[in-house]
Image (cartoon, rainbow, N blue to C red):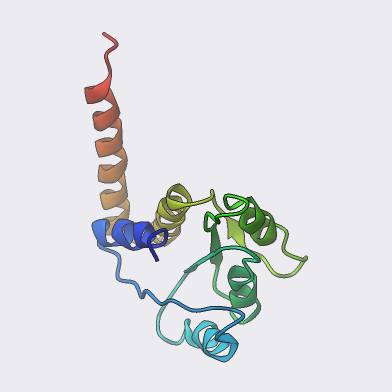
Length: 147
């Protein structure tokens, strides 16, 4: 959860209603499948799934839904998340998962990518995203030692 909490915080910051669940493709496969199958019926429009190690969760979720699935590799102790990254990015044809960077940066970017997808039909969200981007720019400029 510590990695994926960054996605939740980013969605909260942008005022995007969302659900947060912890599940496992291997330990809770029935619950995972039910969650993915019913996500659209609950009004969800995109799913962000983080996974470590074998990292099957994003692909398994994608196999049960027509919603876009954004995969976030969780950093592991043994291979620092490279194993997770390769597992998520190497989906078979027909099981699309958009894959992001390893760790909290990936979780944050997955949330921002989801926000951009949703903002194509939501002018208020688009305005909040513009504000977020401008705040990032202003932070960098404020921290800059360049004239």
